[in-house]
Amino acid sequence: MFPCGTTSEGLLLSPDERREVVEEVIRSVDKKTPVVVHTGAMDLATTIELTRHARDCGALAASIVTPWYYLYDDEALFQYYRTVARAVDKFPILLYNIPACGRNVLHPELVLRLAEAEENIVGIKDSSGDMTLTSEFLRLTKTKEKDFKVFGGKDTLIYGALAHGADGAVATMANFCPELVVSIYEKYVAGDLKGSLEAQFRLNPVRLAMDRASFPVATKDMAKLLGLDVGEPFRPNLSSAGDVLEYMKKRMQQGGLLP
Image (cartoon, rainbow, N blue to C red; front, side):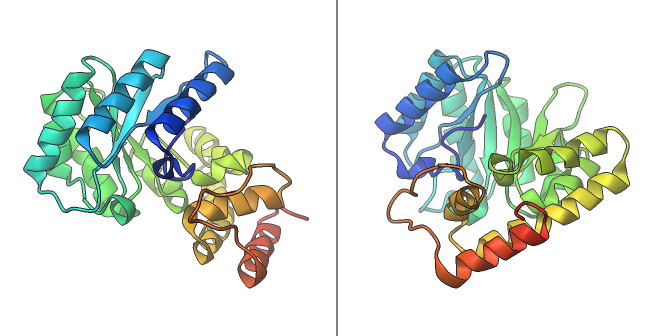
């Protein structure tokens, strides 16, 4: 489980609401289910506060996006993540690279530096959609000295990330069609590369259709089309309607997700 990330509109919630979501998720899931909480915020103090809360609630790890709006150089980002890592001692942290939303890019050399500097910075979720960037994270960090995890964060590139050596993926579409998403991974690790790629190609048109709407809102739109009661998006987001909704519905039908 990955509560309070991009798809769940976590950055539109207040810190109190984010804490409430985390507590409810951890209370509700099977104890065997790992929970990685997104705790990134625009300011350092809130990020530390939310990361400590995730740790104290029993989460497996925290994932932290770069602070956004302002542009920061690599040294500023290094100090930011180092400060958070040291504030929670041995609690595992995943870096979260999503330049389209976070504005700042986690460069491969910076990621390597953080991985080497702080024992509890244990991996990265890369949602850049840049396969070269993902491959550089893998090339630089896959060493015998540390088991640094790299997860794909772009649904259309799950197969590509796995082919480059990624450990897995955090996928938006797993919220409403988990069987299709998981089949990409399961077929790949079983050696069925052809079947894995076929599943990826079946998924891609549906994921690309989501770009007709606001990205996080489209997830809720498609979940509703499948009959899942997920409520309304957080304002200022609005649910999709009209031609946009019909286009997404058509793509879901073509992908075998709807009759």
